[in-house]
Figure 1 (cartoon, rainbow, N blue to C red):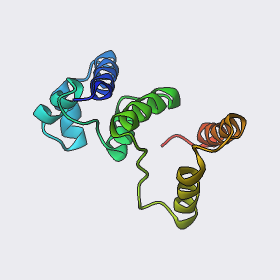
Figure 2: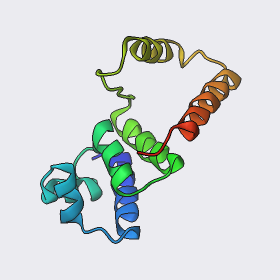
Figure 3: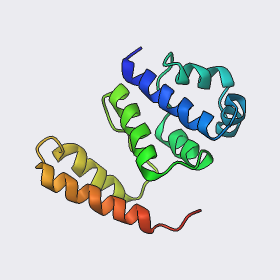
Figure 4: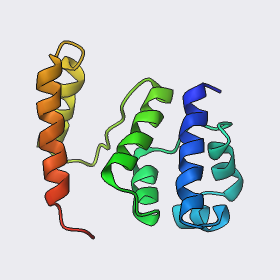
Length: 127
């Protein structure tokens, strides 16, 4: 299993333990078998998908930087970013444009995009 799967799993486990949440409880809330979640944490299975990471983030009350870290580690394992298809048309077009251009985009432009997204995330009301 690639090292990034282990890095993802170790990070997830650290967050779970910091909140004193038992593995079985988190697995149940995610709708996955505890043995599967344990394997993810130990790096024996691929990282969780984006939707499951988002649910974990809410359940573990992670901040944006912690979520970004988990998503980055998951994407490094997959060697690809995965965006949910149930997003609106504009979101899918934006995601496609980023995927198409991101290797050629100057760092300053990527930082501007990152800042826009973070500003938006910080303005969203808590659920």
